[in-house]
Length: 82
Length: 142
Image (cartoon, chains in turn blue, green):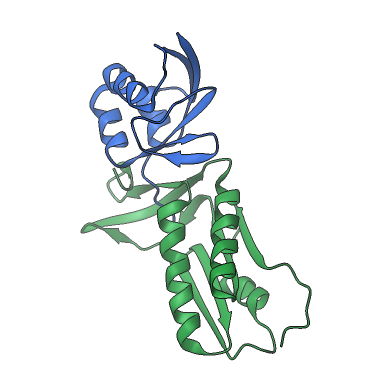
């Protein structure tokens, strides 16, 4: 199993009730599996966030389910600056 | 001709008030005949509902994203570029985003400033919660 630190911001922190947690994913750990786990764990609010949201992996915004994940991954709700 | 050795871009995220004058002053130079600025201002309605305030939150790396966007556009266009974004609780009429581009002529300054604002809105990890007159609130964009 791969151990990940997942950080939550804004609406994602509200949906989870936490700003950070550790999750385990089967190897090879992919973004899609993390996405599925989060939706399973946090339900519709998380589904809504991830529908147009993204992840920060290694300093780069990612959306592709096949992208490998390790270390720390940030859950980014849809951006709303400006 | 540019003889100055000032930094190429100004990009900042902060919780204190921001102004377009600041970004305009940064980009302006004697070689530029056009300075286009944009102020993103908190408005009092959204989707037909009265809004009383906005709260902005930024990812810890947001300023780095903003800097990269400004630097990339400056490199692509050869123009001077600046943008600041405010975070925290903002009242109606306060400036949330200030952007400026200077160019020798207006057409390229208008185009580059519009592109800058589009990229900032699409690519910088910043979130806002709007508070409605009824006391409830929601995250924008969900």
